[in-house]
Image (cartoon, rainbow, N blue to C red):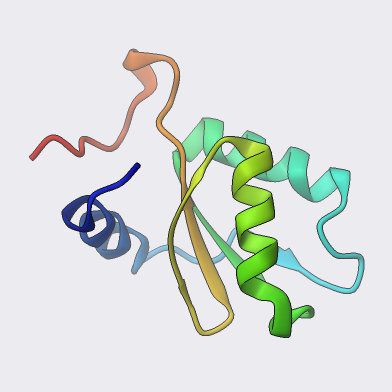
Length: 98
């Protein structure tokens, strides 16, 4: 579980990122889940934009985070930021121990 300090740091890092996933009419399909898993493995920090399903963005972000083993950093507007620490210590890009 992330502390508020860690969430703040991750949110700051995510500020310059462009959304890598756009959730549209199809919703959270297996393809979206697979893409999210790959992006989290490669980058640890991912932005997701809700093009549709804006009224249920919090529930869908939680659902996607649970399925991918990630944590929700923040949901602001129609964008969710998700983070998952890399299992491989050599590939970790983000140090939250500051």
